[in-house]
Length: 429
Image (tube, rainbow, N blue to C red; front, side):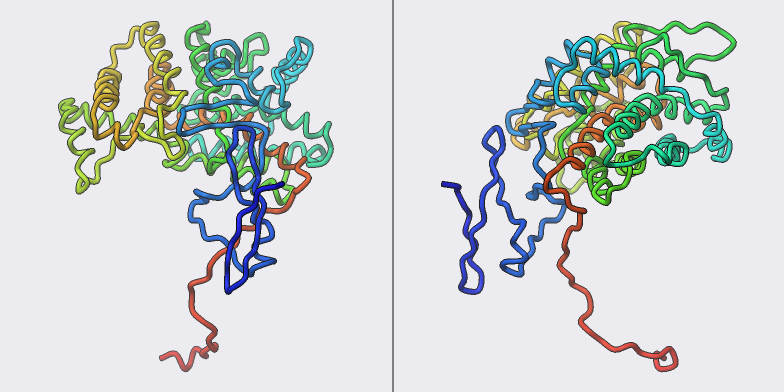
């Protein structure tokens, strides 16, 4: 017998079924709540609202678990690569050798942008934020491929997926090159996904460029760690836009804008700025730890704690090890990294942080790695978008195939003026 939850309102009792997930998590199915009771739920930030069922990503914030299609993130970061992980997220299973070869071939050979797109870059100011450029250019792809943007044609969707995965690194690199006044390079199809992006970012026509395998591997792991994370702000945005049957280019463009916010994709930038502020103030870590503990002080330690994880973020364990490898390889003795290590040591031993479960999260180290690899701070959220793209695609694709597909339309509780009459301008004083 299906377990149900009862709600009593105005002397009447209404029952609603439970929806149970793979690992036993339960939710109340209130899809008929308004039609049967006249009530709606009030849940600012949707902290207690499940907007969908999904087969893609599972995370347990209490236990520090993150799974992509059932596979632990630790295994994917250690044994897989970003392109294979993207296939897993989008198609639901690890690819066969032939499937991966086909997928990789099409991702590689869609990497070049239409020459007319370069005109868009000429129209931007000299130093635009790369996230604004990335979103605008991704949205513009719908004008270049307007005959292939059906949301119900599987072949057109497949081509669009290939194009997005292939072209976003080129779009991102071009936004950086435009900001520093360097020529826009063509992709190199002989290189891997991350190696090609690094070459487009940092090479110049006047001298040879050799991809550092440590840098390429580090970037590959970072993209895997960011590839999906359940129903976060940007993913929910992609789903909401996609629920109007808007095409994948438009939906991803909206997701990039949602990711841009400092509370989402800009978090690792905030970590770098905090570490720089501590360094410029003499590096007195104890002073800033005390400030973080002071409820009357507005200062907050960035990169600690997570809205979902109430344990150690499993991605941060992987990324800490990666950070050490990168810093050792590039021979960077960054005082910010030393400050970060000391902060982490304090936070993992101090009773205050342990009690509040303020563990270092993925943003704590990712910015330091990007910085060591030579990426400017404004590119940090763009790199996040590159990593999150497979998740956005998978979530959009899952939504379109959902048997319960509906356009997203949240309700509200109106608290404005009650009904009143219009007052002519001459009578308003």
